[in-house]
Length: 261
Image 1: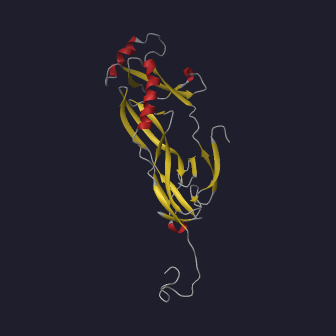
Image 2: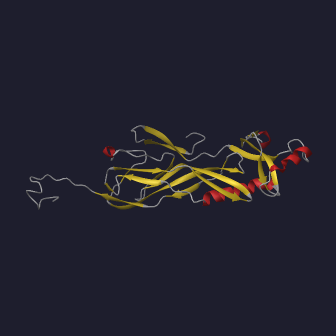
Image 3: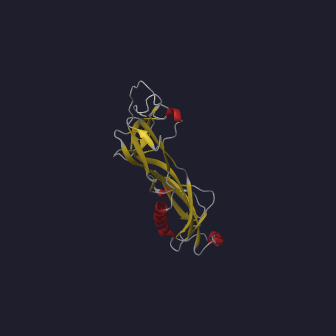
């Protein structure tokens, strides 16, 4: 296990190649903060600079800020500026604003109407005991625009991991691979996300897509959200059948009461 990974597992991709797929998203090592423009070198601010900061006119208490980023293991004073021009925030208390907006964004992110991944099974709605049933999910980037704490917020989310629940008490994940479709003539082959059912019956299959996100404040730089959202797809019922083969002497035209007629 590598230091920046939770764990991993060897699985066979649908191409037939065996590969190691990482489980778990490592913690983002990069931190973000902002500083008020005009206060870089002066405790009380540069008067001429402050007089020009009135361009934050979208709301009351507008202040220009620079955004900085750097490794969380380093002192924030050593982080680097991440934008060529400042952006605005609107707050009476900028010093307390950063934590408040982070918490508000995380809550909004996790409560946003994120569209779940589209679950597909091959074959479906019926499959056979002992055969590989290919299960995969399709999910993409989604964008949400909103107003939080008087700020214009843009949240961009993307799928980063998937947990497959096969409905028979077994599951796979979370894994980073979503699986993918197979041509019909290859149905029954093993894939990275396929599953073999050991018993007949009807099984409720779902997949939970884990989304990571970034946000920007009033057009500022994109900042990673410290947290994830989980969205589960609607249940699809898969019927697992058993097949039997018999040797017969006549077809059903000759013997209409024969096996399978």
